[in-house]
Image (cartoon, rainbow, N blue to C red):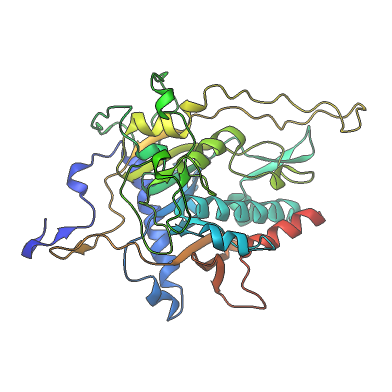
Length: 408
């Protein structure tokens, strides 16, 4: 609580960080978000200054360090998204060309931005300019076996999200949480050594939906409320917020379910595994959460419930049945480390009698490009169209990336 009866937007006094590394991930992510917002011109910047939102980012940990006496592993934000809305079913149906951004929840936007970052990294790797700056900024190396690109062994990807992903990760009925204990033996560049060790959870309530995929509730769609799974209260109006209930039917998977899928097939998407691109999937090494963290629930939601997923073997035959060179495109269930941070993203306060306001329709996407350049977009989450920067059309830059890859 604060003076005058107002309460803090985040109850950080109740949270305990997992370690200094989790807090470092949160701090660089929040700093990158604030810098991206500050770089916007008015009135775009003003549109992002009111109300609450959710932030998600992808952070690269580079084990080579930054050089010099303190040659510790470096962490830097390469992609981020901030948003809480998604398109309604009727808006999706009206998108005949399929070019709108249908889901503007923060985690989805961060992954979208990560794909753009990886496209830029392939450009850097292909250019082979050989400068020190390029060598230190590039996360890729040539895979001699497939003659494509792979993530360097000293590079790992880590996700931060300021609030627990919507969907299964917010359903508490099937697990109990324990309070975090801060590990003061780790520094800001070192993740917990046992972060990826997940004990086998108990799945005794499968019939109740313990493992089920759920969908973001569209308040404008006609649905059978008898089949919904409620968790964080309802949304309203013509657009659905991050706290809206999720259903067993719908158009867009919850963020928990999307992360569970990405922990099976990677965050890079199908196009980046095509010829001349990446040789293998890109998996998250850890997920750090701010509000509403529960380790047991998060592990169940993001990976462990996918325990029956069987990874594919390397492709050893061409589509026509003739012999072909094996590829290293092998999928396997990934168990990311799960960490909590007490670093607050929303430092605002609520006036007496008021609560959080997630009505902001504008969503922010930012990613690191070539030559240290940065790209940011604002997307109107109600329509799925780009509102900044304005150009010949209002299509987000993600479509350009798709067209470019098909030409290589």
